[in-house]
Length: 138
Image 1: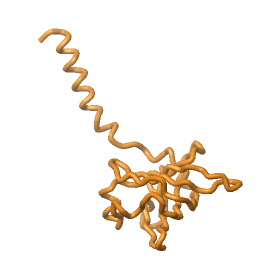
Image 2 (image 1 turned 90 degrees about the horizontal axis):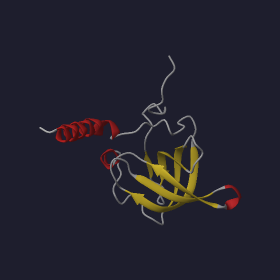
Image 3 (image 1 turned 90 degrees about the vertical axis):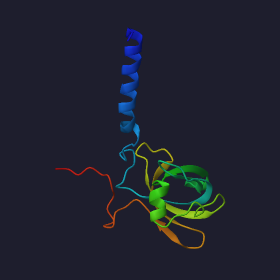
């Protein structure tokens, strides 16, 4: 095998071995010690892997509209939690509770949503009500 083929093969092997490590990210970007409640209009619902997303326009300080992006679980896990692809639609007015981004940008980690009909879909917290994926001090 020539040197260039050996280098290319080694590079391909390294990329394949690294791929599983890039498959998922940490929840450290969300401040799971804080919650924010937003009431707004859904502009988009993305039923996608590895995470679904809801985007809403909500009233901010002084009544100014703010656009928020909220990360949810995977469609597979959401289905097990009672969600359907059609649970949330653009135009729906919802009240959504999130853990905000630590950097102050308009985004967060989904906790629960009150749908227009009053139905509540829960989310990311464990059965004990405590945040998930938060490192504990030893």
